[in-house]
Amino acid sequence: MSLSKIAFVAAVAALASTGSAYAGGPRAHKIDLGGVNGVAYYTEEAGRFRVVATLAQQEGLPIRVETVLAPGQSVVLSTAKGQAGSTSVELSRENNDLTVLPVAATN
Image 1 (cartoon, rainbow, N blue to C red):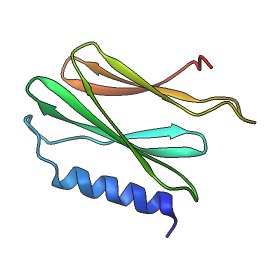
Image 2 (cartoon, rainbow, N blue to C red):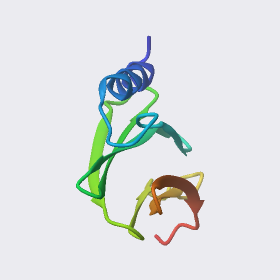
Image 3 (cartoon, rainbow, N blue to C red):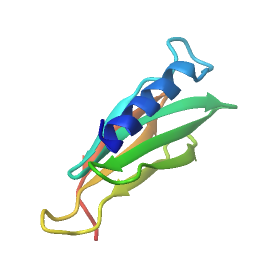
Image 4 (cartoon, helix red, strand yellow):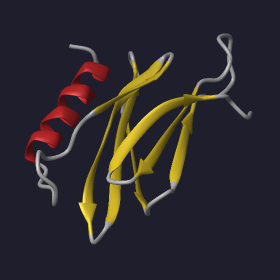
């Protein structure tokens, strides 16, 4: 099993075991940055969202990014510009949900 598949399975397992303050528990969002892929989810803590994203390349070590978002805040994850150009996604808190959308690269 490739390292990125292991990272994905680990992230899904973490989702299954993570508690949340809202009904239904955390929901995974797929992240596709070309050669780097993963998942993101959030848990609610004192009215803020703790967002966790786990990303990996096919044969690379996975990385985990964590941030806390207040209403209306967002964070952008992107790859460095390469042969295929740069790829970016924005993780945003909108009301009581997390959205993951592709955005135009700025680098």
